[in-house]
Length: 219
Image (tube, rainbow, N blue to C red; front, side):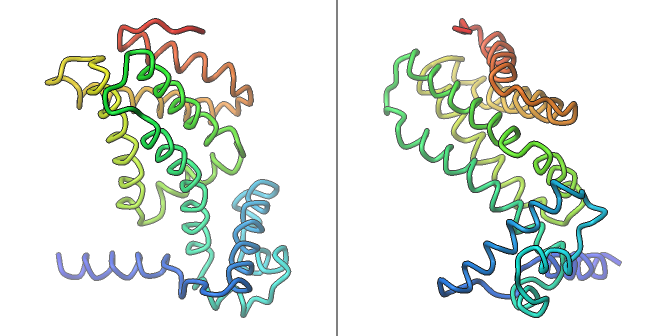
């Protein structure tokens, strides 16, 4: 029974993997067009109008060209999730690279603000798309990929909190998990309510995070 379950899970994961990775500029352009077409269909029509035929037509490519790279629409969705996550991860990497090895408290607070801003921007950049992709993340067999993104964000949070001595060392990992939960919970809830004011959301999230950490928010 366990073996059958593992085989079924493996097969589900294979169905959301791309068939091949684009190696040339032309094929890269095709995949980019497919992903942007998928994003626009989700934003305009939601999941109801989301089919491979509709994606190919919107992208201006043949259905055969789409199937060269993606076996089905779920595979397109996974690639789209990864495309959107890459923007957030790039911002996290930039914050990490710019954080001094022995930052002052003010620099830690600045890094926390940037992380909050990145999380809010990730949700608000294309809010309807973000909400639908959140729904699809829960449905598709991609938990390890989602956890990898969360782990990278958590690692940077822990680094910021530990280097800045914002919380005592024994509590730093729990504090990082709590901050991540606060940010994710508030941002996701704002998305579900279809909020569009990124500045106001950043202000509220910052107040919650800084209040939890015992820091003074400047907003």
